[in-house]
Image 1 (spheres, rainbow, N blue to C red):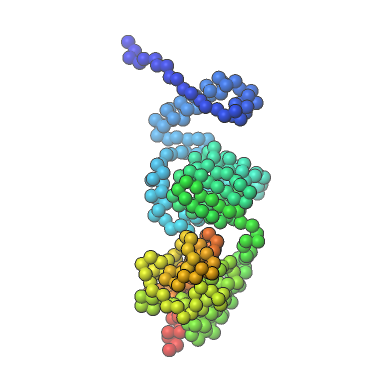
Image 2 (cartoon, one colour; image 1 turned 45 degrees about the horizontal axis):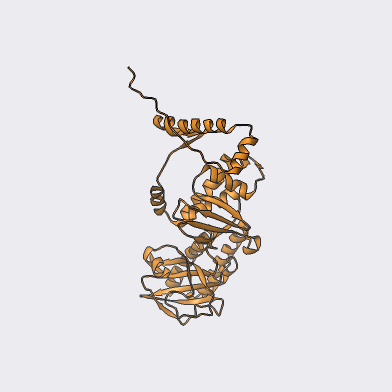
Length: 343
């Protein structure tokens, strides 16, 4: 005697009026559509999981809790997450068939975002004018999705805000950036090396460095600072009326981005709303500083100086700017060795 008992299951499917209209236009009755949904549910959620290998089209699929994903992401620097996102976004263009070989298919930003909403389950994407909004994001860090959208949509973005319930990006316009070809950057680095060879003091190094950076990076303030015991000061800044005057000596407290750079020994990046530099006197006439990028300069393995770039825009510095400043810092280190040996 069969012990199995047939059971009736009641399932309810809620459909918007637009979805109902789309079903009617497809030639299916609501009953036929409902049966297809239930068949798909049984196949993908009951049968295939038991085989230990779950595939949708040609892609193998697995499930991870959002906490697991976010823990894994927390082990990587923001820059690495951004780079990984860019690469996955470029791969997604191919897998979603927006790009096949040399052929790039025309699709609106909202059309591509609609596909993300249907297929990925990372959150809900909408395009509003020159802005992309992601609500209910699965990721706690915005940097992976930041790179992913740039790679997928072939556009440049700025992070406007990032909260647990919403991430907002502005689509960059050409006027917002200083276009620089790879050849132009190579030429700048070459000239920078030549200028450093003529420098006789660290003050000259500071002036050459800040002037060079100002030619290729959109900024509000740029500074070349030195670390002295438990404090730091700036040797050269631009613009001349910047909020980083040369005669300030600021304490390395345990909360600022400068202290964090010294502690971790590598490039430090911070986005937040504040009106003054760590430890600086308040000045309500200063522009709102929303992003800071600090790149250490080492001598004999110790941080002795740093490059400091500020902007009143939220996250205008991308991987290119990070790499450029770190490359300049490497050449400055070599120059400091030379100046030390010349004494």
